[in-house]
Each structure stands twice: as C-alpha cells, then as structure tokens.
Picture 1: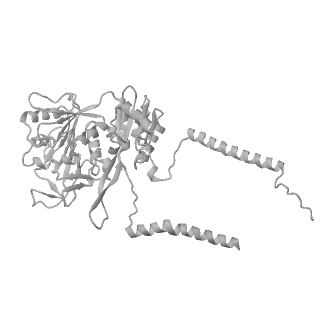
Picture 2 (picture 1 turned 60 degrees about the horizontal axis):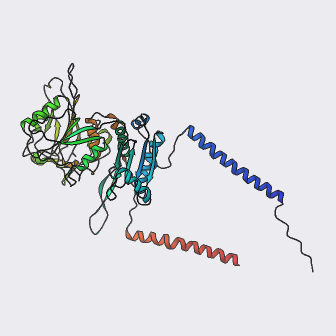
Picture 3 (picture 1 turned 30 degrees about the horizontal axis):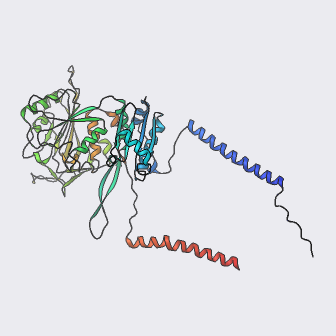
Length: 485
C-alpha cells in the first residue's frame, strides 16, 4: 500500500502574518486618507451636486441675514418624513445650518417618533389633529415662529389623461422655502412685527373666514412675512392709527362714506401705504376709491376683462421689484378690472411714479364695452411718491398697489399659480423691505413623470416580474447543465 503524503498548508505562518500585516496597513492608509480629506474639506468647504434637483444655493440676501445672527436658533421639523417635499425642506435647512453656526436643525417624525412628538406638542402647544408638517423656529425665551409646510409649495391644477372622465391633479410649480425661512429669521431678530389694518364695514371679506372667498390664508401669508394684521373700521371719529404700516382694502361691496375717503386720502398724503383690491362687483356701485386713486395717477376702468373661460391667466409682467422675481410664473385671476396709469398731458409737480405691474393676454376683451377690439389690458399698478424737497411726511414715502381683482387672493385662488408669492412681494415692497425682495424668490419645481397606458403598464409588469427573473433562472440552469457534463 502506497504511503500518502501529508497535506501541507497553502501558506506558511510567516506568509499569513505578512498578508495580515499588509491588509491592516492598507486599511489604516485608507482611513488616514478619508480623515485627511474630511479635515481639508472643513477648511476649504465647497459642495458639489450630482443632480439639479438637489442643488440648493442660498441667495446673497439670506447669507447676509445669517451673518447678522447673534442668537442661537433651533429649527425643529415636526414632519412626516415620507412627505414628497420633506427632502427638499431638509436640504434647504441644512444649507442654513452650514452657513451659520447659530442654526441647528433636527427632525421629529410625528408618525414614527411618538415619544419625541409628544414632547414637541407639549412644548409648543400644538393641536394633535390639525398641527402637522410644521417647521418650528425657536430663538429661546419664548420667541417662536411656526411655519406650516403646506404653504411652502405652490401648485396648479393640470388635467390627467383619462378616457372615461375629466380628471385633475395638483402639480407643484414653485417652492418658496427660502423666502419664508429668511423672513422668520428676520422676525426673530426684531422685537415687534409691522402692523397692517384690514378695512371692514363695506362688505369686504373676513380674515377669519376659511371658505373659498375668505381671507384666512391671506392673513397667514402676511403673518409668515412677520406682519400682524388687524381689522379696522373708519366709521365715526376713528382715524387710521399712527402705527399703521399698511392699509388693506379688499373688495368693498358698498360705497365708502365721504369722511372715510377723506381719512384715506389724508393717510396717503402723509406717506401711507395702501394695498387696494377692487373687483367686478363694484362696477355698478363704485366704492369711491376710484376718485381717490385718480389723484395718484391710477385709472380704475368701469369694466372687467374676459379671456376664454372664467379665469384670466397672467403671464406678461412689467419690470418692477414686485414682479421681477415672477417673470417665469403665472397668476390666476377672475374677471379682473383694467387698472392703468393715467398719462397726464400737464403733470402736476412732484408727480407720483406709476408702474403697470402685469397684463392680460392679447386676446382679452372687455365685458361691458364689447366694441373694444381684443388686446392686452393692464390689471395692476404700483405707485410711489417720495416727499417733496423740504417736506417731511410723518409716515414716510407713499406707496400704493392697486389690483383689479380681490378674489385672486381669497382662499380658493391664492394657491393658484404664483398668487400667494405675488402677495408676499407686494406686501414687502409696500413695507419697504428689500431684504425679502431682491434675490429671494420661489424656486421652480421640475417634475418628471412617466405616463403609460394600462397595456404598457401590464407589459412592463410582466417584463419586471416574469421575463427578467425567468431569464436569470434560465441562464442559471444552462450553467448548471454545462458544469454537470
């Protein structure tokens, strides 16, 4: 019987030690390279992006606001992390945190983190059923600002292909997170908000009304820009308060008394700020504001504009700080009145500067004067008049924005197009807050959708669930047969 040779080890102990030492040395070198790369990155931080959808660059205005922060601000995302826009909000807030050491960010998922969510609700007095998807800015000492997440995304209705019936869905078109977040930081640095007064007593909408034609969302939008809004009636001896930074007249349905019109006229002469929303309901029964506004170079036509259908879609904007950030967006309006500047032949001294803000489509027609051929009508103007030389106005520079529609800023239409953004820009221009105008605007949302018929979906389903796994099994079987032979 032949003697068998004993099995010899593949590697000698010396070889095994050499291989082990080499692997350990390589691992240490890789770790050292990673540590050095991170250290260098902290000294020379430049972020790059692999996708346009994840690219977030803060505006110069926001960076200047962040540089001015002196107090710590803790930002809590009380959010459902499965929300489609949660990653966008987190990416933006991470840029704020990277730009300022005084910003900290954390997330509490109220669906998955019940314990932490309960603590947040208790601390900030949140309602368990209504308060959700919030961004909470806390500067300490009770200085807290809360932003609802659903107000950051502007959407429009688009039709979905459906052969059986008309179907629509909400399509996101813009994201105004930076403008809102920066305004919250400004609010936390200032002890008192600016004050706006909302005229009542003539059939105007209500700030508390959450119906389609109410102005509760209007009030929320101003609150996000750190503007406190209060109702005001000018009947009797009531004057416009001296702390009024902005007077708002939204869709009066009845004429204003002569004494009220005189008070508004005096307020503007003193350097007041006015946002006037007029609509087609006041054509038959003028409010009286038409005469006051004419003295400031504004012509309010006794007619309204019609496009095919009920809505007027605005895509043509003039050059003005209010509308410059909105040049790529749309406004949705309902039967707006033409609002144009008056071209004086012999302008008076210290003539106000009147700028037309946006226009209807070239196909628009007047409803009352049907003989007028279709053309583009101005629908809003902005007025500015600085004090005359040697004159000091108690309220500063007069600024007025007049719009021929009040419904487009009501609860139903304010989410259409860039209506909500327009309100924010108009209010901040009237209040002379350029930090919330220049360089900070809604970011367009690019949406990629793959539309397939049911037959195409069925084919893809069979391909993914049948053909591909089947092909892998067949290839595996062939390999097994070859090796068996």
